[in-house]
Length: 420
Image 1 (cartoon, helix red, strand yellow):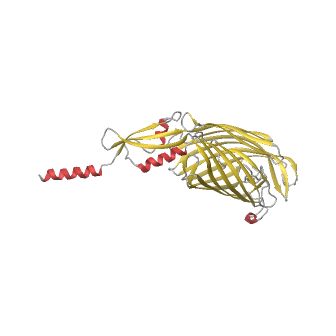
Image 2 (image 1 turned 90 degrees about the horizontal axis):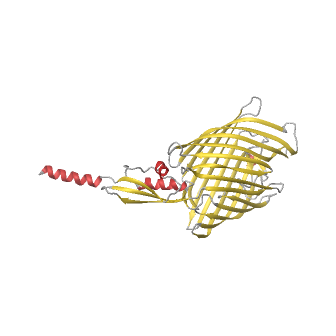
Image 3 (image 1 turned 135 degrees about the vertical axis):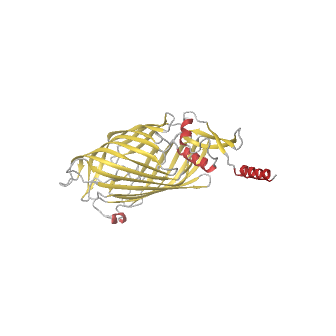
């Protein structure tokens, strides 16, 4: 009798502490995106313990993917006791996306960049495409990025670029214009450490070619310079952003570090360059979204007139002009408040008010240059966003920035995608 009572009590304890298991994962709503890919990158697998926190982490990861507009999950009992089927419901993005940026150069010439990218090649979230740019000179690039090529954690990126622009070169308080060409080939390994942390590392082989066009000259500044270089690159990203269609909330940090080595003796010295982008997003109510980006950058080649950090409409300060200045260190803050003015079905109209501000260290200068009023630029402005919620990055952007610091300009900036 005692043995029967003990067995009965043990059975009650066992049933009370038995864990619910995942019987199967089912993917619904996807058309182009492969179900096998969703299961490949998900942490929930058949036979593991049913854990809502793990499922929610999978959903956050899925919503970050270019191929997915929205995702949610459902859990239903399976045939066996304590087993459940997990359903991942997918709302796909259209992922063959043209890109366009239109602007005017400092000589009031028309300039543009046109591109076409597929963000879900073979249904595996592989990005492939390129662009053509006309900015006085012709430029083009081809890019391939497959972050989950080998596994949930390991991928590869390959990039080729032939970029030619007219660049300002600053020395002795004067300016010269150079035709600048950068032809590069880059290979990066991509590794996802965990849900919030990833790292990229690789090599970039490139050739820089400067040719003097007009402006001031100096015997110590070459009018023609071609140098072959090799760049070692490491990128570390912490990403804790959460997406809900056009709304974003959370914190993200991207650190980019490069060591640049001249491949031919007797040419330019080696140098280091690094910068970190800190991004913070906060939701306010149902329609408001506060977005911020702070960039801190520093290069060790302080004595070069060919400085690496640009002041540019399309990069950091809306309304300032196209490649108007360069520096060997940078502090740039972009802050804007986005508010959804109208939303129905697939379409959303968003307005924003922004302030872009930054300062640069001059070539040959010191960190005190950041406080120099001549290097400080502050541009408030207003903008509109026309958003298609079911096409990846289908955000047509118009911004108008007005400078309030001395000798400022003003102007429109058009583009595809949020500014940051």
